[in-house]
Structures are given as C-alpha cells and as structure tokens.
Image (cartoon, rainbow, N blue to C red; front, side, top):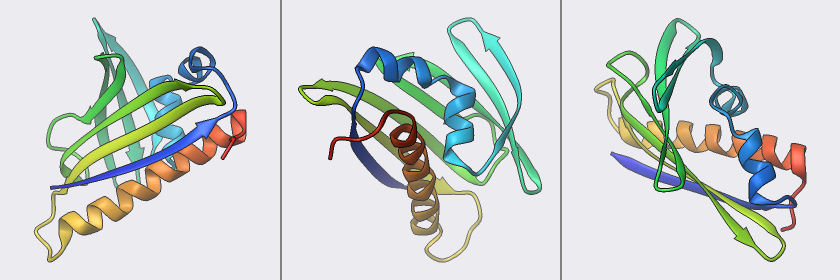
Length: 138
C-alpha cells in the first residue's frame, strides 16, 4: 500500500470551499470517472462512478471534521483505496489537503507504485478544479 498527499491554499473561506466539496463534484473533479448514481444512506453518500470498462461504488462520510471516502466492495481498480480531504483555515484563505492510501487490485510488478502515481494525478486534478473555482494564493 502507498500513500499520496497533495495540498494547496485557496483564496476562499473553509465554509465556501466545503460547500463545493460534495461527493459527485469530487468524483467528477478527479477526472477518471463519471457519476452514475447517488444514494444517500444515513450518514453516508454512496456514489456509483463509471469509467472505461468498470463501475465502482465510492462511500463518502464525515470523519473527524474531514471528508472521508473509500472504494466500497471489490469492484474497481484498487484492492484498497481511502481518501481524506481536510480544510484548514489559514490567514490567506483555506489550505486544502487531500491524502489517499491505495493498493492496486492487479498483481503486477510495482502495482502499488503505479496505483499511487495514478491516484496522485487524480488528486492534483481535483485541486486544479478547486483553484479554477476559487483561485489560489501560493
């Protein structure tokens, strides 16, 4: 398993950024999948996302003031994937930190390294979408 982290400071308050970070918007901003369905399940939201030749459920919930989501079940490219999005109020705006832990489902050499590289690209695209929406200060 590998972990990747990306971070940026946005020119907006945490409240404004948090409103933008709903589950379907996050999935679309990562750029690998499109949203097929959204199912509210008590304190969680399950987004079924689809991409080339696959569908996977992503379970979103609030945990310790973070947005937390994981690939649910055994469908999808990862044997394990969980992600945390943290917002920190800083003097110049909001620091958004996205951290993800992944393992590739396919038994190939350097599979977890490949999974981390792919996942980091998705997280960077999500931050780029946030910067496009709010601007950055760094």
